[in-house]
Image (cartoon, rainbow, N blue to C red; front, side, top):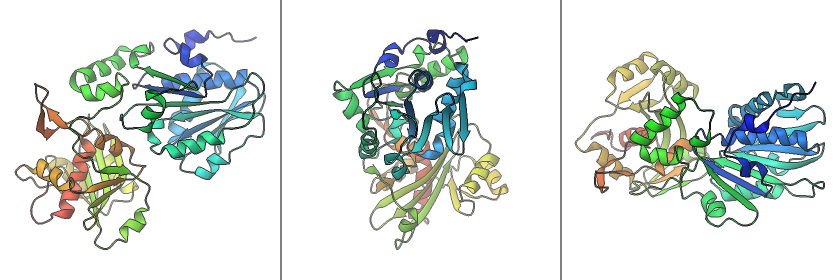
Length: 411
């Protein structure tokens, strides 16, 4: 007996054009909760069954992020379409096989470039690529190499397509210029929001409504799916660049700095950097952002990252949290307040260029949106906007202590 599934009941509304297009580039930016990833996963599972010679490649910037995102979404889609009996899902190696034909869904990270450019399939042809969180790919050349690897003839009636899904954190992203500003005839673009997702419950919707009221800058991106546009940017000298942290450590006079900004509803933000005072560079090489966790979990995470023996400069407004970290064996120290300390710290760091490792995704998002707050008349003030400030506060604690240990710290 065959199961009959009405696709529109499974998928919902808002994506008909996205679902039907066969253009080479299918690019969808959107808010959180806009079901863009879930819809893509459903489309791929439906399509691999519909096209018996097609194979799929799923890509993210880092391979380690695939299992809890695209792989999980595709398993969800298999379940939602009630076709579990036809698919074999494994994590070592990570792949999904459509059992009746042997077609595969493969998973790769762009951090393993050779495995991307040399990828091949044993059965059929590689037709479709899904690039999830495409905003993480900060170098357009990396995407071009992936694009060039999806070449060759396909059977009659088949088509090749690269689907890119992401949240539009900054209007400076190459994705905007390439796909949205001047889309060509090979490009389909779409912007979606949480309001097209009829599967959200009232609790989900209330989160967006509260964000719209209290955090309008973040809501522009995470609620309306619009490009993050930063007016009154505090730091302008920064760039994303791969570097070997062990080589940077060998630079004469280099200083390590570790900072922690406490949060709960807002994320805890831990940052690790190296400061080259001679060349006026701050190398941001590691991060951890997490909301709703206890100090014990924070301590466990810092140790797991390998920084349990380092001096961690923390927000001095949380003495109890600092003591709890110490009880867990962390060398936590308070930042020291001084008059106009925030502005002094910002002014100090404005003399430096931030070199940000691509793995520090959250910090990179923040620095692109870290702006001076505005008053009721819309005029800029001399205080930073709280939104997008967590990692920026964290790094300020650590860097200021590293550079001015005997005067005052900037908390």
